[in-house]
Image 1 (tube, rainbow, N blue to C red):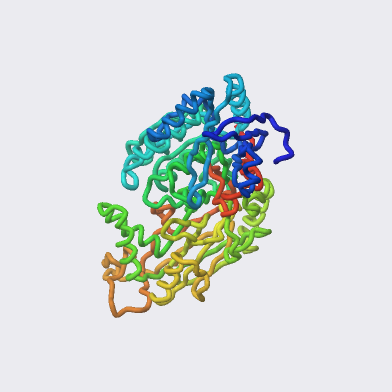
Image 2 (image 1 turned 90 degrees about the vertical axis):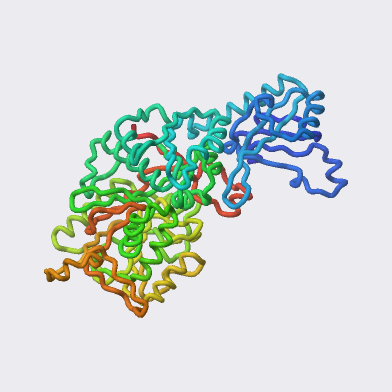
Length: 560
């Protein structure tokens, strides 16, 4: 970076110290100019220097245009100094604070003449204008009902000021009903006006935006979503997530923190993180898209029970979780899956998906992938199972994770080595076991132990999978009249230590929504969407930037 040509180099004043400020195409650097004092004090030059990536500068403006929220004493000192050097400009930039959290910090430089001040503002803004990945106009949807009903206040107090400082224009829609955002995106929104869509809410609100954008894109390109092997067209517009829900799993897994200001700054700097999406079908009927978790058995039963207790708020998940665990049901069925091939790792390799992940950057061409899937579909149609694996069994839980599913309660997630954009999902099968063994498995989601290190748990990295519940033989009228068994919940017996076989089927939960069918076919759509994110940064990436973070995931050309 030091070898790059200097665009500007001046001696300016920072507070009461003279500093040498240098700007090139990638970095803005300032350091104390008094070298003799540094040598005599024995302090290294690095201790008095600071660098900021140009792509992480939020804005540059005249100092009088910046809101001054300093104390009375600091304002008095600033006024005395400004009388000596009245021409000043302020640089707002990204500053990393606690783990994975960002804040907007300001540094003000004083010049001895107006011409020099204007030159610094003009040249720096010219460099910012070259960052074409940055959004200039956003469509924002706010869910006022999600989580603790704080979405509108979070946006107005924490996010809107950041967008305003960065010069981003916004159109804000406060949703009034379920699927309001989805319906508006599918039919009414003029997406050509915007550089991104932002949702303020939880995972449910993100799901609305996802379905609206993906459906709109397929409709615009005449793609039939009901076709199981249709080649879906990736969305050209990015999605931003401002966390304001109960869990915010997707934001946590892609940024590393559930913090509104951090997410807003990722949007401002124009980060771009591709993301896989699972399409879920029943026969030739499209059901839903999933980006985090598909769960059958334990998690399906938990969500089914929690829906009857919505009046309890987020606490309903804890209560339903305990009830479902004590019921300890298992279900018979057949799982068929197409294993992932190539250099895509495996769910047990402990290679976590991080910013600039080399596995996710290896994307097969859509033609090759579609040809491969068609060949294997043809083999299957001829009765040749080909590379498909088939497993019959009794399962307490069947889970498919397209991402790690990490959240504050489970920092490593359900599948710690799952990747965001490698075109695969991790299929986790938990077979019939004792209640104690299943508890040990669940407990490992909350600590650093390997949750797959059990004889009754197996995990496979897959591109596609199918599930068929076992069809039941004709039961007696007496059996059919038992409502608890039909719903999949058996009476809790304190003396019961083994699994309880539920004669009925469980339900699939798809990113927190129940599916109407149990027999499903799932295909992973590689990098179907892009988020305003860059993946979770490693600790050293947060402290030292060895490469331009804005080039880790270059934006693809729009297909429109």
